[in-house]
Length: 349
Image (tube, rainbow, N blue to C red; front, side, top):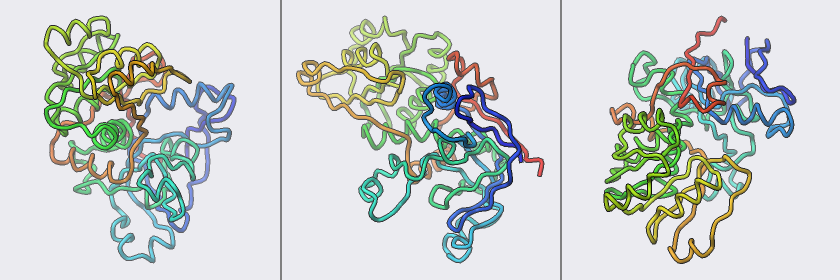
């Protein structure tokens, strides 16, 4: 089969012919119907040349949807799992790949989303930029309705839901615990930011969502996604004063010094500042500002099986979460021109 792989030292994904994987005892083999691309893939490829995040070759693609075509021996022998992931089942592949071992400190305390042993699918473990992918049953979620022809849950929509929707879902719902009626600031309106707007507004019942980005195109998309206000950062403070808004939860989806300074300044006393963006290796936070505003500062990463189940159910119910903006070039993402990217694919064998 054809696979697009990260090779340390190469800044572009390399097309290689590799064997179709045999599923391990606790895995299923999935025929990939759609795979997503996000800005993390660009980072991985950029870093591969000089400081590889994953120092070994593997197939990229941490967002995927497909059909189960075979089961490992332990899956087939377990009646419940064999039925849940029966051959022919339409599934989503979760990026995070938690070990689920009883002795794992993260998994035992409900932090499966930050268990990185084994590596994440498409970020260390072979991923979905291929015709087939083998994945552990604990990372494979059946899609409601089991119908890849359902336009509401098309393979491309399901694929990007596994990361671009799950990440802001977990952050806002479980890390920040956004409550109905609260005012939420989304700083950075790329793919995750646009989905964060929809999760906050359409699922969690935020009273007001304020979006901010330096790109006018992104602000236009933010308004389409449901933001009540969308302004460039330089106009944010004046907007808050003019409209009498007080930010309860602020999400920094950029992760640079300038953006964390903006959200720290914008929030009210007692607010939650949520860090999702990974734009800088390090940032500094003013202890004086954090303490005199009595802020809660939290990080959030990815999501877990429960998050993906809930996201897919929300999409199935018609709640507006997730944007399918069509296929665009990966390098466009590098230039900041891409929000979400997905490829519908039909394996050749």
